[in-house]
Image (tube, rainbow, N blue to C red):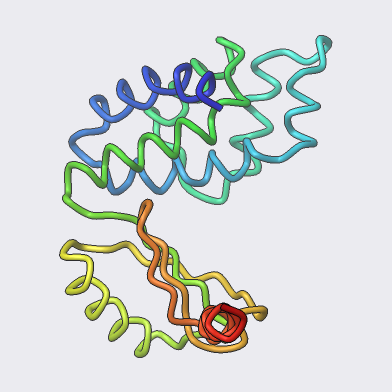
Length: 176
């Protein structure tokens, strides 16, 4: 994993510098490319020696559901021609980390047993931003095994307010 991070870092930093004028737009197409490049069938297609870099590029841009400006096209060509398509998801992760560092924000994943509506998510977001003392980019993942409550992961910090965690605490207390 460290090797992927080492390979991805110069690409992410170069992209960050090149897209400095419009990081929000670049973030959209970088995330789209990350999702596409993570597909195993695409990787298999790209690794085929009979397939040209132009064919891989055309396939990816054809599948992309977002507008691909010239910068995105050139970036994608560079990644494909250098044989780094498999590193593209890690490049996107590092690009997002650079963008978050510049804006003073962090990504937060809210694991919930049930779906959270937008009003409740907005309220939860403001509460969590006060708790973690920084702006958070929230995403929600459903985990029915939590039984109830939520579990929030921000970087290496975890706030676990789930029923499952409380039951585990009770189990430890009763068996100690």
